[in-house]
Length: 217
Image (tube, rainbow, N blue to C red; front, side, top):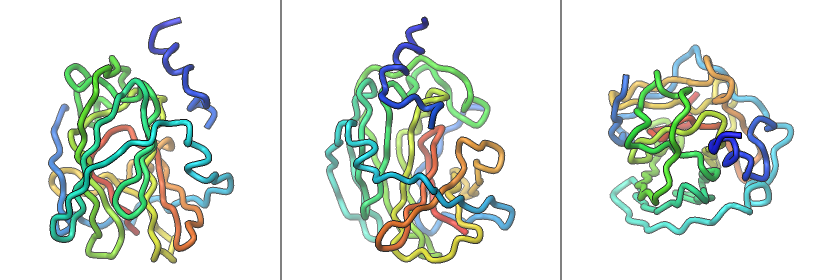
């Protein structure tokens, strides 16, 4: 068995059962909303409380600075251990152990998302920005840009307390030009789901890389 395969088996739930570029962080005024051809989110009939499902992951502490209408937070993650990150106004990031590719060798960009990689082994300091788009929906950006080993679980949960319409709701990736792409249209692993959030709803999806993401419809 390869080292990579062995590392993945260390996680308590096997994920299967369930052009390089560098994107800058987007501000709320730069973000565009989704397109009319986006996949609508799917109601998650098997949604489990996030803390209950992923409470075995280390809970990551953040340092917070408020900058005008954006909450800027930093955290340091041991990629060998993964973590459960609560950021912004109650949003969550789930990062499984050994999920992060080594940024020194992995490359970055749409042509790399499905490539296997050497996983990172040293701590990485991330900056995560949380904001509200012009449409009133939550958004975030994470730096530095890293991608994830295909098959590893990294999941982004937005808590949208005011969400009531689901006809076209989805979580697109927004690039440095402010163009937002629904990656779930061509990759079912990145399909958007929603579930009751009391108040509002959770809107969530799996990620293949860190960049900028928003709730759009």
